[in-house]
Image 1 (cartoon, rainbow, N blue to C red):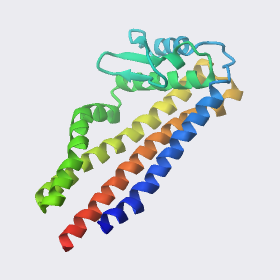
Image 2: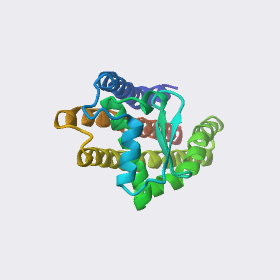
Image 3: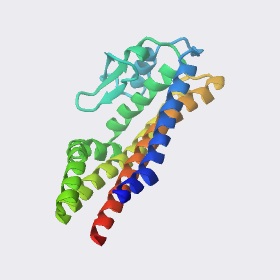
Length: 229
C-alpha cells in the first residue's frame, strides 16, 4: 500500500495539479478575451463560415451546439459545431475557438496524417482506457502478472492516443492563426490575445498527456513492486 501511495503522490498528484492549473488558465483566458470584442465585428459563426469558404470547404455544415465550450469538428458528418457561448459571439475568444475548429476541418480535408491516425484510434482508445485499470488492479489483487501486463498494455494505448492528439491540436491552432491573419479577421493588436487563447486551450492537452504519463508511471511502480514481493 505504501508503494501505491508513493506512485500516486510522486507522479499523479503533481500531474493533476498541473492539469488544474491548465484548466484555470483556459478559464482565465476565456473570461478575459470573451469580453474583448473583435475589431472586425464579425461573429464566430460568420468567421467560421467565411474561413471554410476560403478553404474550399463551403459544404461543411455549421451547427449550434448546446453548452459552454463544447465546440468541436465532427469528421464523420463533416459538421462544425459551435457552442451557445461561441456561436453568435463577436469576441476575440469566440473567433479564436471557431477558427481552431475550422483548422480541424482543414486537416480533415487535406488528409493530415496525425488527425487520421487519431480518428482511427478513437474506438480503440475508448475501450483500452476503460479496461486498463480494472484489468491491472484485478491482476494486482489476484497476483496475476498476465492481467497486470495486459492492463499496462491497454493503458499504454491510451497514452499513445494522448500523444498523437498533441500535434493535431497544435497544428489546428497554427492553421487557425494563419487563416485569421490572412483573412483579416484579426487586427495586429489582436494577434497576441488570439494567440494567448489558442495557447491556453492547447495547454490542456499537454496537461492531459502529463496525467496519462503519470498514471502509467504509477502502474509501472506497482508492477515492479509486485515482482519484488
